Image (tube, rainbow, N blue to C red; front, side):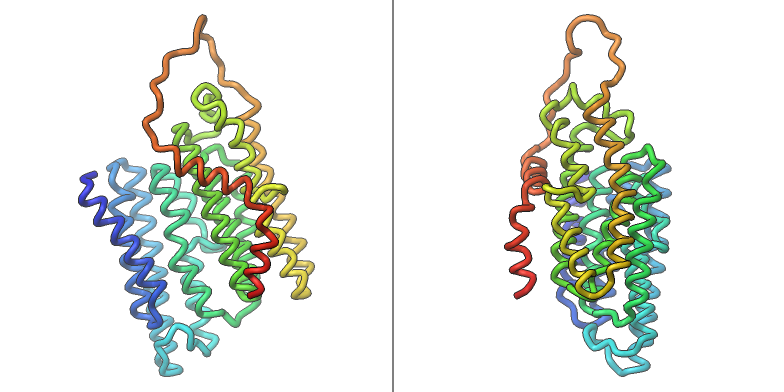
Length: 348
């Protein structure tokens, strides 16, 4: 893609998200979400492959539906209460509609079925943007409206955690596995958003870090299926040794960074007398852990069939920039000791 066009599209992505962050009026927030959608569509369709075009079409239709629902709900709110302000939502009907519209835009279960299909049709870089940056604007709106419908949010959160674990069990495509992982993590954040918004932000930040490092590892190895992970020993042995730890961090095992948000969320749910929901959420994390262990096993404990006699085949050195990968990997593995500082910040 032409670098000038790419720069303009990335600027549009950033501007759309920033506009939604900064807006207090529903029309401006809706405009930011629309700019976001329109800026990423050329990035998704840039390869002109039928699968990429199909994914782009699905994404456009889904986001257009979510945006139309959001606009309808905010207009209904203005009609019922006379308010266009995002933080002045008081009527339960528009709040419920907006929560569902944002759930559709983010890919929360049961409105999730577009997300794995869309990510599967994209390359890893665009898939990374879709899994991380595109979640920020809808999540900012969800944090601002402070939904009063507790049952709806808990139902969305539990359904997402369950579907995110269950859906990834039988997959062989890495992009679909990461999409289901994204659904599960968003479910955990949705569970706690009404009780501790600052904890939701912490969980979102750690999810962004872990997803960034995982996508960058797969991009460095040019892996898109579980079978191709077995060839990564020859390409980057040190990284292959670290990658199982990255995946277990995504699964939320101590003493890795991914354990921190899960631990604090379970603690917060227990404080709110929701021990049953906390137990159910912890059990759904076991489902996700199973497919992360599958990936770890395929990557670290298996070798691809190698019938060539003699020396290792010649490989050109990789031309990819590895500094972001190094920084995000270190953060994904080693930030758990900062948990006391994080909890102190959350209580401010």
